[in-house]
Length: 171
Length: 115
Length: 104
Image (tube, rainbow over the protein chains, first blue to last red):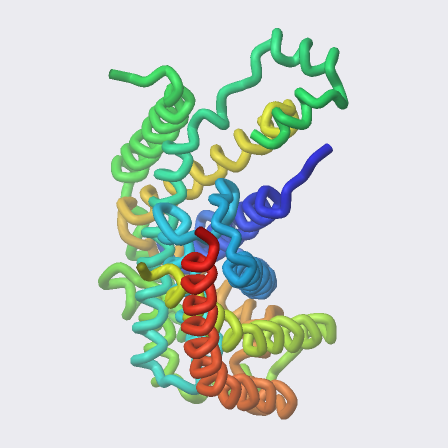
């Protein structure tokens, strides 16, 4: 099986974003608590752990992009999390804003309560924006939801391991 | 008008939109469960004072500033397990060490990507 | 890869989850204001988080010597790294442009 680096990064990013989303939205306020049954402790735990993973993934993706630029690799990677245009650029900007405001919230002793409130406000609204962006992304990439046809599956089983399979895997 | 390729998206949208509207309808038509009038503890009073409007996290933090005593109390009564200390140390260290590199890398990418 | 059934199931799961997340946020925003019991539960949860989760540890981060040093170190890193990366960005850009000129 041919698995590409950017494919893996895309889905790891998606899983981490989903966990951060559910745990973060459960902490926004009293109206949102029902999302995780008011279990603030678990939400906080998951959010902080996943934040570290999120920062790590962002770091790896940025290093990968910089490496590709140094290599002068101008190919367009469809699965890449960050990129120079379109939804990839949107993801890049929202991720940076979320990480920076998140770090400010993390050290709320240092920036005072006004800065804290501002950082939380930005963090919350940018996450709504990013969630809307995810729904838009699902709309654009909706063809991925179409179930493979039976005929295709049979032919796939027939030609397992063949060149056609690899070509399909690169799709 | 409906692109058959987008059919699954619209299916999900309609299902979740209908669920959202039904849930909101039942929530608004439910008898109001506020004003318990039984809160005599300090927590209850605090909550009642903030009950006036939509409460979000920053309100809670802002309120906590006034309640310096409580913060003191909580910083002295730490009952965390060692694993939480270690995880907190690891995550905080990782985030703070990687942050400058993320900012630096994004500056490089910004310079490279701007035409 | 994208045609495998288990990947399809996974994609469906993720898409449904994000839809759930979006509808949860919409319901939370537009539902009737927080009731007494909700606020109570939320505050209790927050107190529990301060006691049991990392929130309490992060709150008195200033008593943790090593972490304080890490933060100071990363703050020291910040400005030189910004300068270095600005320079590196222009250098890479310049090299790329020169290569583009040389190639054809």
